[in-house]
Image (tube, rainbow, N blue to C red; front, side):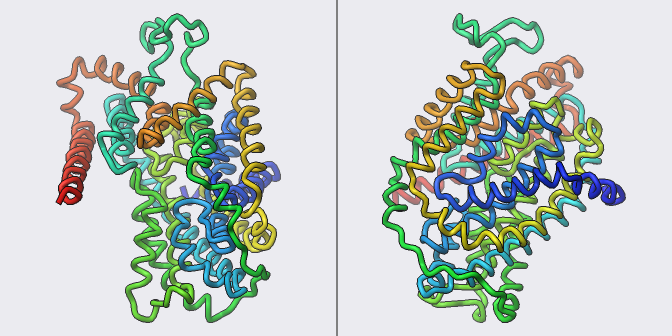
Length: 497
């Protein structure tokens, strides 16, 4: 892929491509700076519009949103003491004391430095690892595709949440929704309950808007987010000036956080929150990096923010190479590509050879833009962090309804969006993780089709599981399930003692 980078840079520097990257970066910073929103909600709202544009531009936009939000979530964490996303929880502990004594800009400059270092690590990993992984995956046929899709859904079910049984239940809900509509072999409608509008199935795009975005607005009042924002206090806001000593102090922790993010990012269900907690802990181990809580911690800020951005970028590697998302936001990238007719995973490089090099170039450009736009956005975004929750909710709901309708200009999709939002709220109330359901909704129909074609190709289940790669992937799935159940049982025993 490296030999194609010059042409990829030429494509990524095209004015239209740059427009998508810049818009994505600004949107990501704003979404990250507004508690209760986050990149997943913004991407879900934009999904209907993205599927109607060039796949390269869509990934440019979505990846820039993820990168921008990786820094933007530090803005409310430092200025108002509320993390923009859960992964910024420790940024509050490390950075809020700076804002309280009028040095919020200083803390955010360290955050931007750490995010930039993590982003560079993540992009380099993408450039050097994506091609070998894709080359290996070209050996896959229908059985291997099914096994990979099942691995993605199983990993999400087992790892995204505290209880693997509830994760599997959430996955089955998503599969049930994905199976509504025509049979992939016979074409006969199924699970429609006599509703003609369901004969062609439930579209994933409006369903994902409701399941991932609208449900967050239903949840926010229950969590009291509005009250927290109303009572929050901003520290003194000053534009930051780089301090050589701060950057030197942050360099080591940023490298440690980046390494953690590279390891955690490709693991389904782990995500930036896990990476940030591990990085913060590692940044507090060396004596020279330890700080008293009331002082704030430059090493802590640098480590956590570097890990978040390295994690967000490295999660794209299994998403694009194998079709296994490492994070809920990556599910929306999968949805956008599949809605445009591209086969995500091993066949992606064959169906569009220019896509992966262009993504690598776009990530490098996004890194540079994050430094520039992130620095300029520190002061105005501090006010967005404390915007009235009612205003945020109204704008978000209007955008979701518009996006759901615009996908096919159909009111059916609006009702699907609303129904999926209520389903997502019910899943939250029942403590069911939503990510496995969302991933099953995207991969379910493909997995069924690949399973049935694979059984025909191998003349039965015996030949299906006798293929070495398929058998190895199925063994990994079994290990994940057994390990998750064992971990859950052990945790339950400890709580009962």
